[in-house]
Image (cartoon, rainbow, N blue to C red):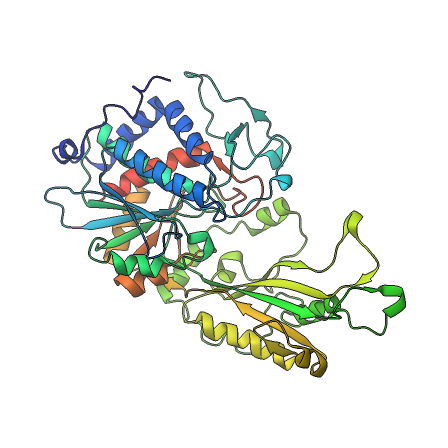
Length: 514
């Protein structure tokens, strides 16, 4: 393709400053028209971005991703594009840029993250590879078929899916944000607020250096509001504005057995099996309805306000449809809806491992059994306090808890031995629904659709909103764009093209809100 395409001849930021403001209907019409005229170029550009590996273990890929996003921002006329770095050069940089608008009295930072979850290519469907973007006629789980990349001029179906790691979580956020601005600039529409852009590279790792980055660049990042573009729209397909996010922390457990694997016939009934011990321990943490039985687990939750409770009652309840789609008979939660349960802390087993299964299974008593717990927190929980509740529960089950590899003396003394290693976590954060800025955000999103926007007090996913509040004292609201069935964090991750196009319109509406 010749270099003269949608990225060439973009309006410089000075020219954008001179453009006129426009009413919501005009913004939507012009942005949609621009997107429709440039869908093929946008899809090709996005596919090139998705082809760059973005998992933490690939340092070169992460830095290349950051550099590519910075170049995409410069091509769109975004000013002062730079890589914000931590003290350690090994930390992926945040990508920053800004657009200053004469007369604007407010500044909004648009946030997304460009890192993705680890991948196991062998688990992806036939014909898919995590970093080779592929189109499909629909969800492969629902009978979609793989498609060749269409020739320029071929109509693109909004229900087509683009499969690749990060396609939904969260390069889609990056693409929607910068393309939303691009559509405004190319359509002659001036933003109503000063814009700043901040794309993080460690969100999937728990944002361990985000506080450092925010503190180092506090003056640069001052604003009235952060718009977080991450996560899926509501399962009904409606757009949503999310006022808070879970906190999160992972806890690794290792239960110890004999020093070497033993023949299960020669030593069964005598040598303790760590896999069995771990299974019993994990089973003690929840009852048959899925409620966590750890003492005090729910005690410090801040209740929802009357406004938040009313918002929950207005959310479409489609639990039975989702349950049938996912193929299980009865949900946990003692009859509570999914959205009600999202506003409670949770405990999940991310994974378990001990010896082998399938063709590699052998008749052995293994030496260790491992599991990783995922603790999701709501407002009022403190992640360190929540970890201590788990540790006390483990001790009450008769285990001696160590945070290092057990010594010979500990092995000899304690019949039940577990190593507990918590990761770095962060707490939950929630913005009040009656915030004046929140009302403006909801109004802007609503201007892009006819059906009511879903207002959700707390999202199911976790985001470092607490860190933004702690370091910058700022207000945060999340406006997601991805389809709910996008397989984020798993194999066959995908983005529905219609969701990406809608996301561009949503971001443009937020940049021109009253």
